[in-house]
Figure (cartoon, rainbow, N blue to C red):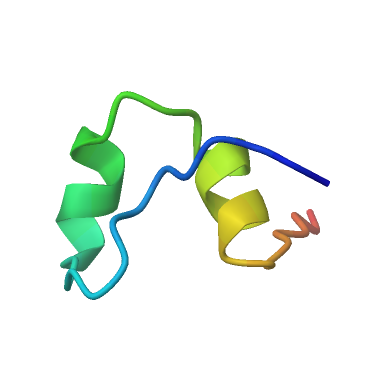
Length: 40
C-alpha cells in the first residue's frame, strides 16, 4: 500500500502534537499501525 507519510521520520512528537496535525486521528493511527476500539 502506498500512501503519503504523515509523520516525519526521526522526528519526536508529544501527545498533544498529534492533535495539532492537519490529519484525522484515524489517518495518524493507520500510519502508526494502531487501532482504537471504543467500548461503552
